[in-house]
Image 1 (cartoon, protein in one colour):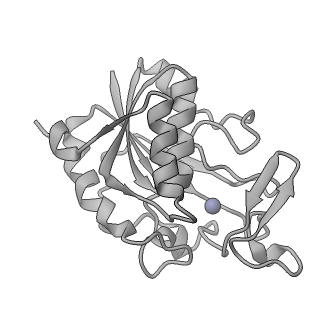
Image 2 (spheres, rainbow, N blue to C red; image 1 turned 180 degrees about the vertical axis):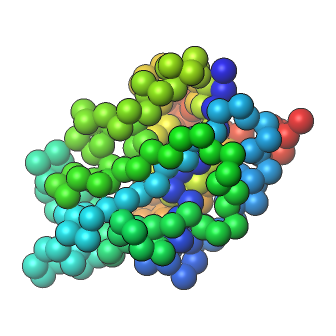
Length: 204
Ligand SMILES: [Zn+2]
C-alpha cells in the first residue's frame, strides 16, 4: 500500500511566517490535488516548546542560521518557529487536513531537534511513524511539503533506510536553500534511491 506523507505545511514555514521557506505556500495546491489518490494520508507537524535548543534565542550570543555542536552532532540554529499552541505552528489554512489519518508531531523534546518524520536528529529516537506504517502495510511513500533540504530530505533518506520505496513530488516541495542545499538534497536523495516525480504523473 502507498501513503502520502505531508511534511510540515505550517504557517511559520510559509511566506509571512517566522521561518518562511521561499514560495513555501506553492506546495499546498499540488498536495491538496493528490489527496484523493491515497488511502493512507499522514501529516507531520513541527511542534517545539518555547525553550527548544534549536532556537538561536535560547543560546547566548548566537544568531539564527549559525550552527552549534549538540551531543548528536551539528545543529543549525533557527529563528523561534512552530512553538506549540501558536498560530505559527498551525497548518496553513489552505491545506486540506480533513483526509489526514495521522499527525506526527516532532521536535517536542527540548534537547533534541527532529527533521525526519521517522527519527529525531540523534538518528535513534523514533517518532512511531514506522510502526504505524508497518501496521497498515505501507511499503511505498510519496512525500510533499517543507523544506526540501531539511525535513523532506531527512524523511526521505530515513524512509529509504527503513526499506520503503520513496518518491519525492518535486513540484510539491520547496527548500530553504542555504549555500546550494536544495540541489545537494536532491543529489543525496537520488543517490539513496529516492525517485523524483511530478504531481501530474500521479493524478489519475
Ligand atoms: Zn523546527
